[in-house]
Length: 106
Image 1 (cartoon, rainbow, N blue to C red):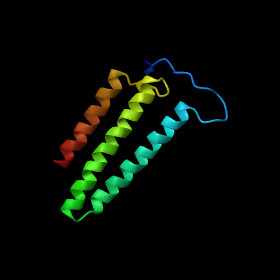
Image 2: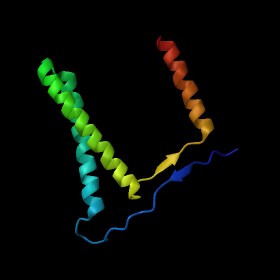
Image 3: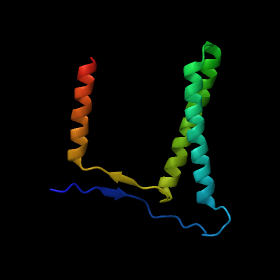
Image 4: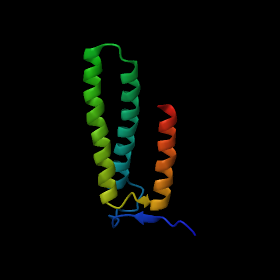
């Protein structure tokens, strides 16, 4: 029995195919920038020893993370990203495997 996955995608918003940057290019650059910023803020939070500074950075981290998520959702709605739905059987196997690992840790 073969597990077939299903692509979940919205209709793609067309953008000009020219050497100039288009909306998709700009949005993709913003998404990648947000991702890198979230990574950098996470490192800074791990290294931060001052509570006031930590709280300020944490708020910025949350806002940046939310911006990154909104940017991804926008690109998904525009059809520029798709996701692959996993078969239920594979999800259950992964859940059992991770539950087993959790039990070993506790």
